[in-house]
Image 1 (cartoon, rainbow, N blue to C red):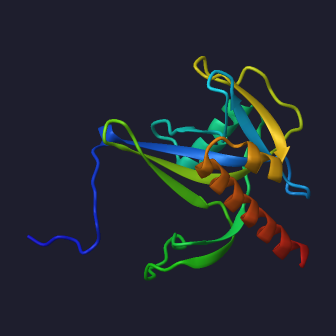
Image 2 (image 1 turned 180 degrees about the vertical axis):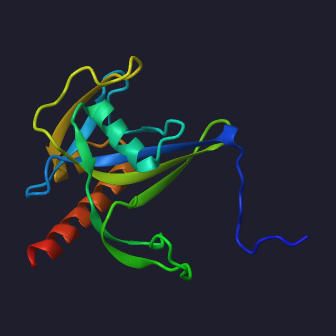
Length: 184
């Protein structure tokens, strides 16, 4: 029996969790502002993210969870990025390629869980679609306060280094995308 030459792990459905999260921007205009969640019980500054519902696609999860946890209506923010996702219907060799205005995830976090499983968090950029925050969007078990911060302050406040890394990458892509379109 042959084994793959690449390290491979498999997880039954009871041992993996698919999540979507986003970096919510107030707008795409400078100076950029990023929304953070303050977990009122644990006193942590976090990014909005959560579990995919059955039958839901991951981009919809990211936008839904962001709205539910922050209270800000939002939409996916297309970014110019390099991805290995092929164009629909194409028969190409696996390769990274630049894609303008992509709504593909820009980052994946793989987090090991206590029970030997894994959590996959697909990260997207979102932008709020309304100035006013809606109250009452969180579930009964959530206790967050959401606020927008200038990028430098958000990077300083985020409790976890992994969240700071996600913010930094999203900001880099938003700035690069804005720079390309400002030259048109």
